[in-house]
Length: 201
Image 1 (cartoon, rainbow, N blue to C red):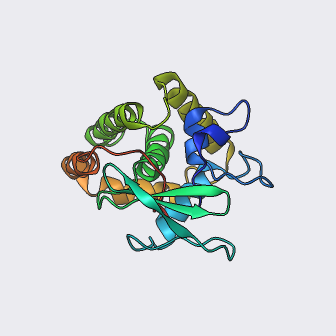
Image 2 (image 1 turned 90 degrees about the vertical axis):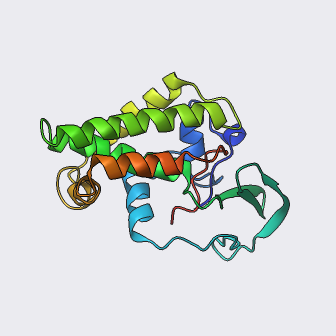
């Protein structure tokens, strides 16, 4: 799955949304829901580090440059794909997963698991700050909050929010406990680097 370059975002889309959604000339920016993207991230295998991504038969070649923190770049047609090879995980992929899990918790587990949900809130605040600080193109807190509100609205409009994979994702993370979540987030953010989506599927 390609990462949209911020400067190629369609008019009216937030910068964060442009970073999260695949960019193709023949596909509307908002065609895929965040929930579908998150399910793909959970269910499909992660490509090995340093492997050239392939999409629809297109061959990719590595761009002879690696940005700080281990972000590797590949040229695929007229797009440049960025892969996080830091070994810590792709920031925007984790943001997407945690944000969906948090929304499921707020809507489907209201008043439950208070310690876990509080830690998830703190983790998201920390990831938000990391995105604002390290994004190649400026991203504001207002844009992040707008994206968050839009994602929640999409989830609320779907029949799947409180059944199936939503609660399953929530329970899988909850069972690890707030302490493990804190450690996981600290490890994720331990290397300053550009927030990218891949590898996420």
